[in-house]
Image (cartoon, rainbow, N blue to C red; front, side, top):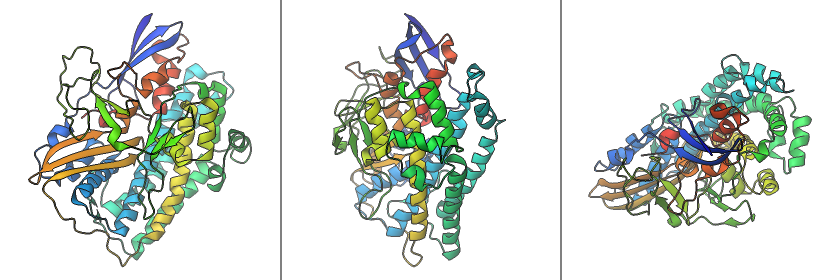
Length: 483
């Protein structure tokens, strides 16, 4: 048995190290380390409750709106206030813009450049991948950055700035829009849809959104959508057998994404990819195990938990805690959201492999991109100009609130306790904390640690493309992970 330390990773948000035990040129076991301690939970304790709206978004510069939304939701639960309808729609639109920008960045800037590597030279698809996706040189990145910049103009209209806006409040959003701004929002959403149809799918969005089976997906990629970047990925994935790389069979969890009068746009729940069972989400069953984290022992329930670093702790190897749902690891992200929501193609791909893998994670991310882009047009049109965007929230001084939202990378939760108008306790469980968690007290590995097992190294050691593909398929944001 040989041990190999991989890291730091490029094109990953934050610091990440992975320790691999190697046997027969494949990964036998893995330990994922989050080496950077942040401290945001301690920073918040003792401050006025509204400070969470200013400080929490600064956890991250790429999912800032998600952190704002979770903090606002926790305060909303504490105050017992119902937000203005316009505020809900505007928040959905702004949150969607950030999440779509993240998905786009992940696919084009973080994930696809790996296939332009020289080690793939000689493959039938390599030259076209190199011309299209190679970092700096390929035209895809510039096209995407222009589309992303245009998409994020939504933030300027609805939030005044991005990242770290104060526009998202418990009672709604603070930026009302006029008729001209509404027209701008509709035009931006339409422009982004056109970009997806031209570059990503090479077909109207109705085509990828109508796919129900793996066979239909294959026909689309070889036929109507053959010239799109989605199809290019699918062909590469087939050649490299990415459906059998990065496999895991954990429950897939979603808190539900984008609020609506009749419930979330994407449902909350837990999907078992092995049995195909869909179960309701019991958020009260979430616990934080710190047996292998650089943290002192304490209550595991998030509302009661503490975050006290203990770097000399025996057996610890990460600053990330190990979130567990009913005692089990859970995988979160676009794949989990679409599986819980019941998307037929995603469900069929999960059934075929009896679990998640590199291929289906990326497919789900791109299908969700199309799904949310279509919804964003509707949200922009639904803004009612003569109605309020925010209501005043009654500021209770004592109590508890939980804010559960879906960031691009998955389920994000904020647990807040207040006493005499000040924050008494604050806990954050980010999506990458779920996916990149260390082992728990029973020795059960987190989702990424499980998914890395079996990855072939093929003599490339620390530069093994297989390890990079598995890690990137989860789109890690390590700066959100440990607080």
